[in-house]
Length: 334
Image (tube, helix red, strand yellow):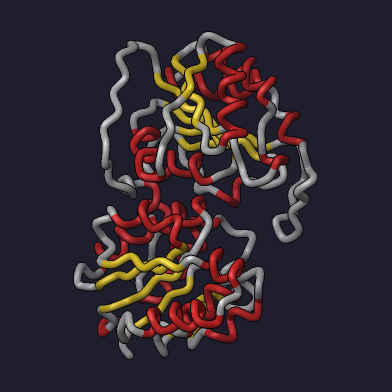
């Protein structure tokens, strides 16, 4: 099939939040390349709401893979397979995740399937399910990998300059206003691994050094307790409201700066073109697409992205003074 004949595609990107955020940037470029392409996005159920408002997506379909894993129900599995098959005959299915589970999902969506080749993904067996593949170093920026696999599949290039001038990925569903004349700074204090989390004791020093309205974003009860502790330790810290995925995007979009660990909500700042500082310990800048206003600070640790050490707690070695310095540069142009 000629690439110009591709008018109906399915994108498979099941999880996690940060990866979905960094994948969704491709949507605006697909539509710019060919406005007639209809896009269906397949994701895990929990992430469907954040994608359902994106104008470039015609249809969002979700799977509850956690329920399938927990219940081990053959009837539930067959029901999900039949639902995938019933979505229609896609001209092309693009697996942006490159895992066995996403490759299996792709298999039930259409005959023409594209993904990363066996040397470009963590689970090389997934490449066996594709009819065509793209080769790009696994160590490359995840954003550039996403842009490359989409462009390679459809026959166009998503350049660095396009990524640098992108529009905000997610539309606003609610407007947050702030009565204070101070700068509004958000802090993302959670992460999927403990070793990714910058110590709250050091965050107090950062907040005291910035001395603006510092909103502490939380997602779990444990994070809420840490956020409340920060608010007790410094008068500049404010407890952010309880947020859904959609209102989280809205809240971050109302900020002047976001500082956070390597986790989904931090990546949302880049998605929405909000200045940000991402703090890395056991991972590194491969996880983002740095810009002049979306910067990062690495710990002294040497990171092997092919063999991540989840016991690497070196993030605590990033000096608060360095974070404060970079924050002031972004806030005031110093």
